[in-house]
Image (cartoon, protein in one colour):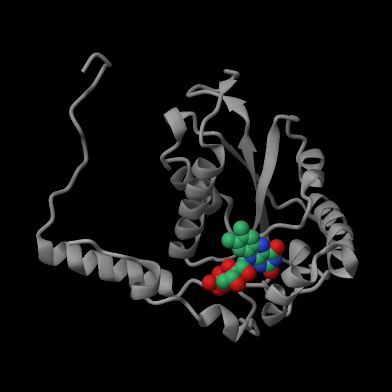
Length: 224
Ligand SMILES: Cc1cc2nc3c(=O)[nH]c(=O)nc-3n(C[C@H](O)[C@H](O)[C@H](O)COP(=O)(O)O)c2cc1C
């Protein structure tokens, strides 16, 4: 290989039994994740959010350009600004802009334009996708597979938050351009999702609809 390589470090060889047990444990943990829309206002220490962002930052990415940026917000004024802007967009969305098919798909979730959790939850984390960047900060090379990379990082972020005992909502008020302005991010960054993070409220409920997950047979094909 012409590139500069070093020996793999940190790889742990497990017995097949241990592998099975670990895979089952991860599955059992992820089975319990549910999107939360009723949050407690109980504070969550900043360092937990920082560690979960670092976990997200380990994700694979096109050419290792790591085309993501996470803006973590606990400041009440900024959260209020985000709520006002998001509710304005969502009022238009639910008030006629969204096609009927989309509204029908959302009906089982019971969501509407009201987003009180944007102020109640202790943390909002806006995830941005960077059109330009590079393996080092400050570069302005073309990024590759941006959506795939940021999607993977966001999935790992949710997994880390859930594993740390936190509830999340993946929120995508459409359109999300206001997030770039409020978070003061550059024009070549695109808002990807707004993660709402905190403890579920004691009274939190989830839609039955979210419990229906496709079976292994439905989501996979094995050719052996
Ligand atoms: C890309 C994406 C965007 C989403 N946007 C919203 C949203 O704007 N508002 C909302 O209430 N839920 C949103 N959700 C949450 C989904 O409704 C939820 O994941 C789905 O109903 C399954 O429920 P579960 O996460 O509990 O398994 C979004 C999820 C994803 C992956």
